[in-house]
Length: 68
Image (tube, rainbow, N blue to C red; front, side, top):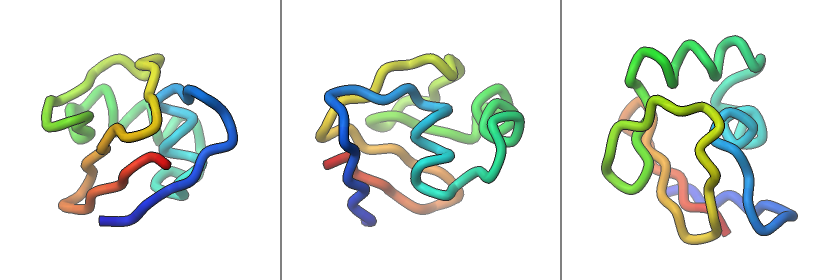
């Protein structure tokens, strides 16, 4: 599991995918989310504006990322 540090209290899912270098563009992040390829805390998340908090676990492409 990779730990990703954010500098704010919350971050939106699409912004997190870019911040963690999972997606290089916002349109790429949107594509992954809309296709059901991203899980938040074990559940598929289809809302790119989903607010993430420290401690949340994001799964993509068999990798896990924990927000610190």
